[in-house]
Length: 116
Image (cartoon, rainbow, N blue to C red; front, side, top):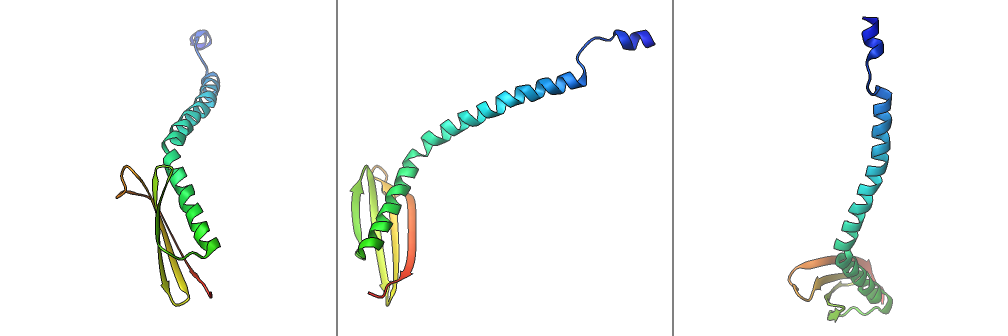
């Protein structure tokens, strides 16, 4: 019986765990990198639309231009809607693609008080 236990050849549990740790140490970062590359390319239009919406919102706030306006920029339709009730100003900026203008990509809204 003692000879049988001593003569068994193969991998020990420690060797198997070390091999798995090394394998996962390479596999996980590789999978994350590939996933990030795939996500970055698919979100470029949304990021650009968001940047345009924030820029439009900041422009309205800076210039105090509370008029409704539609404009086109870089293949996107930017719609600005403004509602005033007394001192309360509500601004909505909607960005959609020129190819599919009924589908909203970004919808930002902001309410603030204006004493001008």
